[in-house]
Length: 271
Image (cartoon, rainbow, N blue to C red):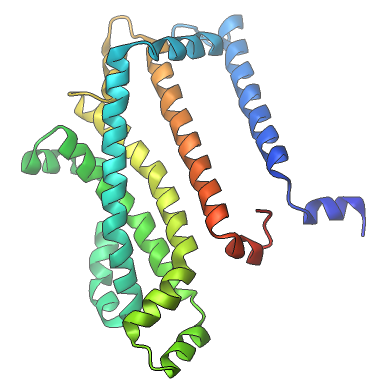
């Protein structure tokens, strides 16, 4: 077997993967810096990367910005937690009881494609604005990745394992808790990881569209409508949102790999 074939068959180490990601990020930052310094793009619309990062660092000492960030973080965490608490049991129910799944399928397929941002006027009229608006929309958007991954995980459970447990006299609930739920747990955690990104997007976008109260989205909104627009503030806020998303995703991936080593071993992945 050639060295090239071996390199394709052997997964890259964690250090190699992170080195490649860091190199890509630095190359992207260098491109932004070059575009701003050379005038290729007007610095009024895209400041150099060093200016954006510098402004992002100074925002950490701004109590007003920290208040915005904590408000967004609270809405994100509450919405994601409530979505998981609803979607996992509902996914287990729909994935385990075919009659209920058939009855609810049309409702689920109708609701899933509706953009959460389109519901802002309706939700604002029914429950008002503020934290409850953001949490409600985050719950709605985050529900679907967790729900569908839970149902998908249940479909992949080994039927022989379930039949073996039934042959020993275990009922449906015991089979669900002892076989189906542990086997589908990796898919559920993947759904939660995907929903975490969706929740972050909905939190900030809802704040931008609503344009009131507190939150990083509100900070970005007011920086955008200022005269002249504070592009460094806008992009610094975007920088922190993106960095938070990267960190959360990395932590969830690490926790998932540590908790489900057996699952990744079956997939032939390096832990």
